Amino acid sequence: MPYVLAVVLLADRCTPRVLYSVGEICIALKCASFACRQYNDGPGDAYTRLVLGIIATCSVTPLAIRNKQAWDALTA
Image (cartoon, rainbow, N blue to C red; front, side):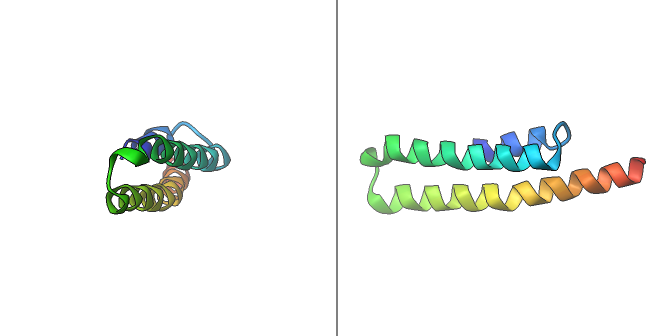
């Protein structure tokens, strides 16, 4: 799940608004990757990976934002 890693690495360097945009871009890239690679795998495998990738990105993005906001509040 390299797209989740991008969100985590950028969390400390971005504003929440930019981080939500990064999350949306990651989901778009995941869908594009699915469209390009779907024909090589069985239908169940490809759809499962797509859904898990989207769920992971949607879960990590708000958590990373909340973590950054908590860190900023502690250091202020």
